[in-house]
Amino acid sequence: MCGIIGYVGPRECRDLLLEGLRRLEYRGYDSAGLSLLSEEEIGSVHAVGNLERLRDAVADGNGHLRGSTGIGHTRWATHGRVTEANAHPHSDTTNRVHIALNGIVENWSELRQRLAATGAEFTSETDAEVVAHLIAHHLNGEQAVPASPSASRDLAEAVRLAYNDLRGHYAFVAMSADHPGVLVGARKECPLVVGIGEGESFIASAIPAFLAETRNVQLVQDGEIVELSPSGSRFIEPVSGAPIERAIEEVDWDDEAAEKGGYESFMLKEIHEQADAVAETLAGRLDSEAIDLGDIGIPDEFLRNVRRVVIVACGTSYHAGLVGRYSIETWARVPAEMDVASEFRYRNPLLDERDLVIGISQSGETADTLAAMRLARERGAKVLSITNIMGSQATRDADGVIFTRAGLEIGVAATKTFVAQVIAMQLFALKLAGLHGTLGPEVTTTLITQLRRMPHMIAELVDSVDEQARRIADQFKDCGFFLYLGRHVGLAICLEGALKLKEISYIPTDAYAAGEMKHGPIALLDENTPVICVATDSPVLDKMMSNIAEVQARGAHVVAVATEGTHVDAEEVIKVPRTDWLLQPALAIIPLQLVAYYIARARGLNVDQPRNLAKTVTVE
Ligand code: F6R
Image (cartoon, rainbow, N blue to C red; front, top):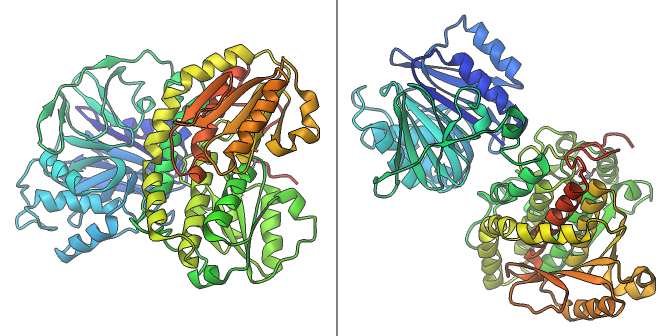
């Protein structure tokens, strides 16, 4: 995920900004940039690659870049390639307004056309650049280029007007050459925090960026604008422009805690980032009646005639693929198969040019998945990659790509990238259904409306089930074995829940299709066995209920994950919000991640770096 830092005060701030960006490096980035305001001119430097490259670029300018008001950014590309021109900060046509933005502006294309019609000249492929032009447009009395160089409005007012034109989820910071000593930030869902120092102020996407300078923090809430000057901050409500009171809080984190955003581990932080990851993965891809994935590199004409979809992946990505397989078959009525990449590549698979092979890989570097994708291409199939990493090998070995936009995942156990993969697969399945005309407009609109609400549902769920997950973990932390049972997409969630528990707690687990239980695994059940049952809403819920009754008859403990409003007769029931049944997986996994997490923590284990595991598996 991208990082923002801004400073306004008496100090020469170039190195302060570079240091702030260094402290945000853990979030992941592919390019970076700085803009500084000095003597009513803004200088800017961009670089592709790591911060060393940015430092070199700054040094090449012979110290040209100076100023005591400035902004910096690390970019994780979402719209537009990884190039210097696409790196932030972005500026308006006259180079008077600069902005650094995290997140996505959904209506960028329509704004770009509107602004271009008033004379704005665009220099990047990004959605973010429109924000600089839009603020300039409001500063200049609704013109892209001012009649006279003096600004007519104050910067905060221009940002407020711009904010009301924007759709999407983002956080940005703006500076203007005509407003020295002022920065203005705005937050719509993406995080933004203010740091108040002695005669100086900071703004950033995360506290670690300025923690070495001040521990006095003000949290910018969703839907707020903040104006910063060396003497402090002024919070503004964006619709009315009314002032908002905001207390200063003191944070007592050390550097390590700060990197984890105050969470005790990266894994817990990333579980809490799932709402954001899903919001980013959905951003700009939902029209009211259809899915717009943009140019994914696979022509619609091919997808309309596709004979079969074959999905290949490893580990957690395989489980996301399973959800995708069910979604494709149910919604698009296209035959879909799922295989473990390391099996697929050695089974001499039958493929031809009518087939689409989808390789899912968070890292885009997993050896078996890449080999399976290459094999598919050799045999004439079209290959689509679903990955989280721009420029990864998977993007080069595929005909087309859909990016999950979950941001960097540091915890070895995949959490937010899994949920983003599930959503990306479901977007693709809906697109395919649209091309095959298999879902009526009403069903499509309902699914799209529910997908739109998914980030909010996830955010609420992560908080609301936390206490229950801790309690369940405490009750079962010493058990020697866990069984997971589910059907259909519930089975995919069981497989993923069981993998999470075994990889971070080292407790043996098994995940089974509930209908198979009577064919063997039932022998494992006794009064000491916890059985996690995914019993969310589905056409096979009655069957799942019978399986739960069978488990209880053997004295085992049932922890069921069920949909709100459904009665499930179990010792412990975790409720997830009601949605269309096929959208339940992205919700149902959350309590299972948390239960696994708290069991591992109760056993005193390092959840971020489990034994014998690496984040990226590049060997065969
Ligand atoms: C488990 C986990 C792994 C990965 C697998 C594939 O938590 O993270 O099972 O899912 O190694 O990795 P990618 O998705 O990078 O191909």
